[in-house]
Length: 498
View 1: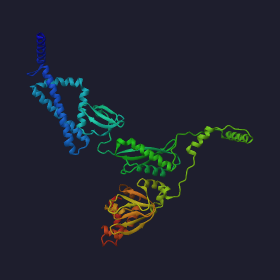
View 2: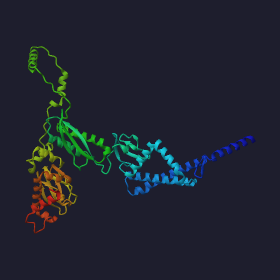
View 3: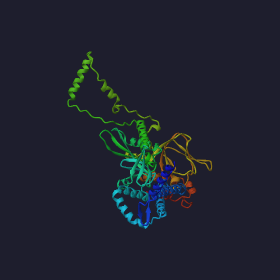
View 4: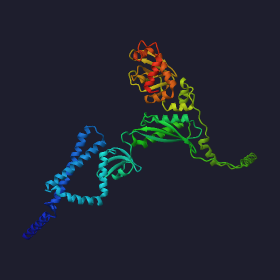
């Protein structure tokens, strides 16, 4: 047993000697294996402390400052780098290494770093650039090399992107410096979607425009401002090419929103019997006379009792071809009328051409209100202007509990609140089933620019309500009987720049 103990003691003596034997010197300080292991452990400990402190700052201080996710991640990463660097300096000083003696070594390592690790150095500098410039931040939705995804992490060497399919892609930071990047979340997350739609030749462009705009406004994720637009792109080989342009503020959901809008477009076009065509070819015959004679000859043979084979396949194709199917005429009820026909019933739109009405449809939309429904309430903020296309509404004062007036087809309301920037002055309720043309505040200016006669009509109607204007303070008592129309018209010009 004694010789085993002696050998164990000798082994540990040799091991201790090997661990403490100087391997090389940095200045006046020698480094052994044990010293190097100690430095590595202390450096790891410094990195862990730096990470814990930066995470604590991010979750406590930065969250309370209500910074967005990208700013929090960038600041926390920079703090982590700074603390880790300071920790390494303290570790080296605690080991007795003079930092000035590292200058020559740093130069040599820098040369090797530049040649052998240039990709890593490029990615590191690119990562610092991303963190400091804030052009791409954690949480941004970006597109790089046809790859769509959300930035999850920006690290020293690479950036992790989570695609819309839930995949995590690791991209070197240098790619973000050398490649054109589309940052959908930069400054303003709003973006415009283009949805192409083709309809059959012979379709009414005005009705197509109305159907596409109704489909866009039915989708809750489509913004009302800027308003949806419809462009007539051209005459295709098999279709009239339209394009629906809508604005959204959730670019990461663009595919889902496009799908929802396409479902609504299909629904609206089917309701209006507007055909979505398919590619087809026309067949031209050089000798139609001979074909006609052959047809009459076959007909005579059939009348004489001969059986003529029938091409069932061609017959089926003719029956299934929507280009020759009969269109269903809409009913006479106002709900089935097109918006163009309803607008033509209004006095100041009855002389408009189809092109003018198509442009008018882009500024507003029709909305159906059943009898007894409140359209707008007294003291509520005013954000829409209404024109009665069919039906009638009652104007009531809730403060005085009095009936004010009944407005019928062709009349409008809601203009006082928009012109003066005040809450609604009365409650409006439908007295029967009604269809209203709704124009929101941001589109009213465009409408009045295109329809100056409507601005005159609004001024004329307001000038007739002199007592209401006096109560609102728009006209004083002395000027009441003078030129209210001119005063109101000037007010509209100042407000809307027309």
